[in-house]
Length: 197
Image 1: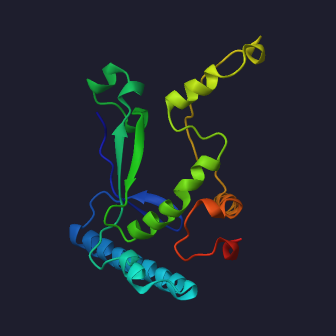
Image 2: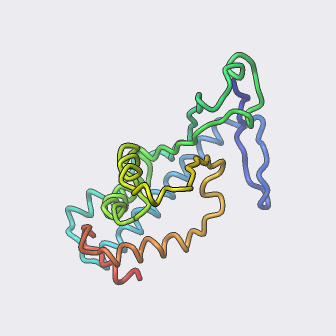
């Protein structure tokens, strides 16, 4: 169904394929990178904990353990978007429609990611366009007065490349603003959102 993906490396800003990587060198590189991420993650968390004077036991729970692994990216094939014929023959990788998934389980950033997610999750309900599920969406559509719908048509759109050109700093600023506007609706675990703004 798909072609083999070879490991790559970046040389002078250009990504190139490595056809026959040395397994031992690859393992050493992964180990070194993982240790560095653990060190950076724990250093960041120590600075945050010290600045915010957070509870020591809580800080230990968030600290990244020494035995971790790098995040793993894998894909799920979108069976509903690929033709049945594509599963019967070898086709080029770029033609297979997939959903990329990054698993951070046991990674250096897993616990910090959990903390940020826990803080921000209650704020999702403050976004007017957020829908919990299809049933909520259908209920909202049913509640639109018929007069408002007169002469209008519904359409569905599919997105081929979401988040390709997102301004990261702009997103961070928007999230901080949303959190500051709704600071009484979430728990910040000793952090102060006013200091972020």
